[in-house]
Length: 409
Image 1 (cartoon, rainbow, N blue to C red):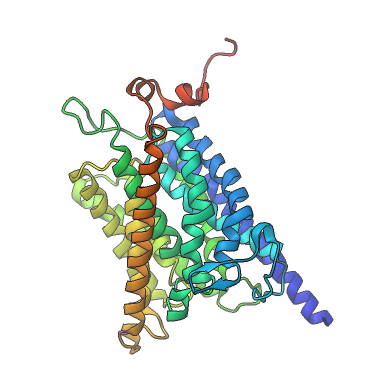
Image 2 (cartoon, rainbow, N blue to C red):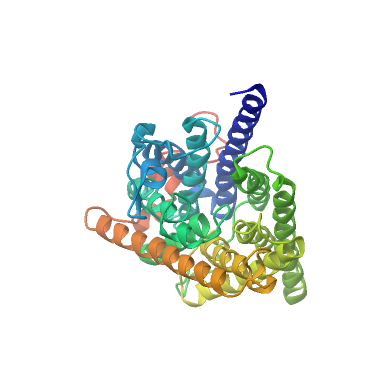
């Protein structure tokens, strides 16, 4: 390897590790966002679930998941090598090491499971959540990830999902929907004597959203896997525009409809824009990114209202933000992609492939989660007791409060 190639490989390694660290910092964003959206008595519970995502998620992906996703392809369906990063991985022709590639992909898998934790906040059994996190990171996500990114059948058909609107967000969003339906709403959410459950700390949730926004530049631009890729600037721009338009449209909508700009809606509107642009950030124009953000922001608002109509309790809006916006962003590639998009003269082929991939991944996320949790419920309860829920999971499950004024016990 000559000096130029060595320098290029070194730059790519630094770029991939740096952006992986940015994505990992998004877990801090998930923790703060969800802790701010739930009641204070459940903040530690949310933090502990995020630690489960990082610790168990990384280990399970290292032992099993990475091989199923990026191992040597078998039947366009599953990877068969690379367990614990051993075996034949020669088909991964990157200038950096397999270790580097794993670190970046591990940050992705952690984000997938973190989507689900907020949807079942304040009532899900901690032990059952650990089992689900293992299932998601070792099997559910890696298998479908192989279909799109690991040499599987959807990727061979031409599905475009640059950083994961479908592969990560729609999959996780529909998993969150299944889990929220199966575990049921919080006991005081939809009862006649119940009421509106108010988020405990909006500033905390806002900081979480800002950390997620920051990490999303690593999420999207880092998916180039190359520091010299000339698309990095454009990817960063479309990411910024979609997030801004998603937040702006929800701000204006709530301001004119309710005469008050609603902070949780604006927070989730910006995140919806980020989710929506993730599939097409490298493929669509600046103006298309703005349109995608606007549509995702408004669709998120509609989906949030629809969940309440059907009495599906999603405390942080995981399904409206990730599931719905992930669907829109995936289909938007088939419409707006500069090369192959319907509006760019590319015909219907790409849009049809995007639709097929989207239906497959959404169904896989929902049904896989439903079946696993249903089976799990035969061995242990999925939700805590009514008394534990009233006391709060911080004390009931972890024996500590998020905030205490006492210096001694």
